[in-house]
Image 1 (cartoon, rainbow, N blue to C red):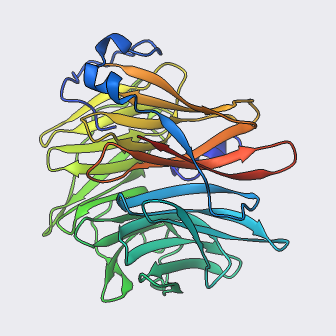
Image 2 (cartoon, rainbow, N blue to C red; image 1 turned 120 degrees about the vertical axis):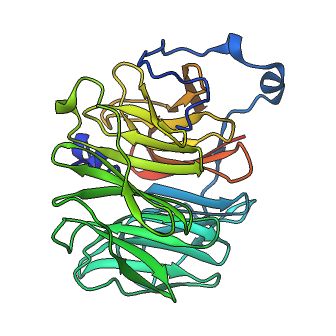
Length: 369
């Protein structure tokens, strides 16, 4: 089972449009400029640099999540005063602000419900850690006994929050729900040995968890009353290629849920309310992160081996008809992207990662608009 947050380490360190068909056909890796509308051309949307909080400290960002155009968080690690500490950056709509953590730990994910509600989690020397943001400060909150380390978080538009943890049950994974100011275990009829890697929440009555079990992908959905398993199409290349499972899931609407299959069978999936439609990633690509684009398409971050010297950020955009390579601004060092997310009610996105210079690595942030 490959967790989407460990894909990079294991290797080296999608709303699909309505025009998708069931056939799996990989399109050429080139811009489909002829298909752009005049409005798109006039807008000249592109990826642009965003400055991290000052003073800039050595480090890298791994995850980002947004609740609105004025409420987003990015997390990672940075080095300050000779020590490695969590990087907790808040976006207020105009600039990034640095916030202190009450404990030293390595963040694995972040979820944001609004300006006064956010969650992050990770691992410290003492064990699993979870934090909650109340609009003024981060505070440490308990994780239920035996749940293990939280490896994925999600927040709904109604303020609900969910998490999946690495272990602590006979099935191999634990689902948690935020209630009354603390994380609580949720009973989910997971198959024995299920390893969950992703969670997505639209509301408290529309929650999805995903991962793998027995060498195949697994997706389950909560409708507010019961959990049900949602069958997936066979992996591209055959069942034997499905061992990495589903590493990212994102419910956009009741009839549009996106999922990303892992590196053994890289593909973009879209649930239309009745069935899954699958689209292969361009040949030779695997993806680390997924976001819808607000227009019926999807953005993914392709994997980049850290040894490759890439001076621009590199994204793949699915416009509902074809994949298109999109590059960010030129940089002075090697770009390593980690995550991206759309700002709700816009077509703008944030992405985070690191810029490897000659002597040090620094946080990298970009915005598409």
